Image (cartoon, rainbow, N blue to C red; front, side):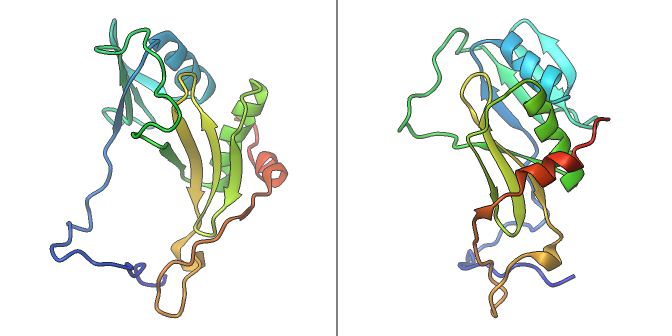
Length: 172
């Protein structure tokens, strides 16, 4: 494997390299719609369900995603052009697992906003039932990432072979 990607700008006080994103907690308007999509379509497990909150996991973590209606029950989605979250990226461990996610979306006729091959990863873009942006992706092995001669990422955006990806998402 090649070494780590070289940053284009390094902090004067770098963060510990083992820091990662633990979970995402979102405001929601309707927990039943959230449950139907994230559990019923995507296959997340429910860790805890309360009258005003839902905690979900993939593989037994205390929660990867959480949703609450503490201040947002029945509320509207943020309007276009507002600041805030662009999307949540859900990383699948293999191309086959991403293909399975695509198959699940096709089965329920869930619309995609787009699909791209970024060189580092392949991605599907969509919106959840409340309009939150989602990216479903799988990372290529690091030794396949497109780097320039200085070890910096070269960002690419190519058409994704959606049919090939769907063919890999065999029913489980």
